[in-house]
Amino acid sequence: MKTLVKTSLVFLVLAASLSGCKDNTGEKVTYQANVPVYMGFNEFRSSFSITEPREISFPGKIYFKDNFLFVNEIGKGIHVIDNTNPSNPRKVGFYDIVGNVDMAIRGNILFADSFIDLVAIDISEIDKPVEISRIENVFPEIVPEGDHWYPYAMVDKSKGVIVEWKVKNISEDVEPGGSWGGWIYRGDMAFLALANSEAGWSAGAGTAGSMARFMLNDKYLHLIAHPWMLKTVNVENATKMIIADSLNVSRNMETLFLLGEKMFVGTTTGMLIYDVTDATKPRLLSHYDHFTSCDPVVADENYAYVTLRSGSRCNNGENQLEVIDISSITNPYLIKAYPMYNPHGLGIDGNLLFICDGSAGLKIYDRSDPLDIINKKLAHYPDFFTYDVIPMNGILMLVGEDGIYQFNYSNPANIVKISQIPITGREK
Image (tube, rainbow, N blue to C red; front, side, top):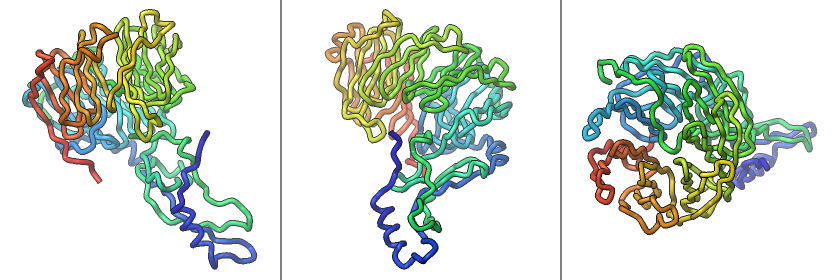
């Protein structure tokens, strides 16, 4: 059920405003609300640029391709890091993409969300990126989050893209007994949380972390356009991207993971498995249900690994790892659940399972026996808050609260930190 965000503070302001404001024909109502700040469409759609490297303040998704590590600065753009030498990563630029949260790279084309649009950027020359196309309004109702203590004022979409909210007093003249407060519902909105040489981009896609909302499937890009809408975009010709399919899903989707011709969708109430042999027509094969929770997923041919965590947005008190048998893809079932502290992202490499367990740190398990994972903990590094990981070729790339870390895990029981890019703290 959609619920309107109102608080006692709002009503206190209202009560104070009503005294002495009435007359015989109407009344003036004053209250506080989140009021939208707009960026005009022309400015918004010409705003992409590259700037000098900057400090990482509020990191989000991570992506790796051809020795470059791309780190999202939530709502602002993408840090580009030359990771040719993981022991000495070097920030080479910042792609200024207003409203950015997700990304994917096919060949030398970077696909990124920019609030309501999908943007294609040619990064053949990493320090000279060029926006080559965009599809407008791919992501309906995507806005930054305002102050949750106040309602949201009505939006005029003709004024441009909402780039922030400011809490302001609003006064309305209403007829006696009439309604007031032209609010919009939270439920109607989807909130966001260089080198001077050619990069030499390989064909194919890069590697995303487990929190990815974009997933490349050959010449198609699957994306969560809205928590209840899955879209497929034909990106074979990046200068003329075409929406090939739009699918309404009766669940709150969060993450995507592709394994061959199967796509695993993490939702707040379970895991969905789609056959994407025909990428333009994803076909639901099966689903696995759990209680309401945040839910990233990774998988191999036999098992899917799902982390469930509590949190104000997740509406759940459980924190655990679930191991799901998917050997029969049309009949997935839980074989074991393990308690965790507050798990976020996860990754697998061979028999290794890496779990970012929030403030409990990084945990590494031997997953060769899915019924005994908890007793085969290889290592636990509890001294930092961890969000998401990409394990690849013995190097673990990890986003934590205090930095972008890289570890050599050739000896999983004694991984060695080889570099850290500090995080300076959230921008105001």
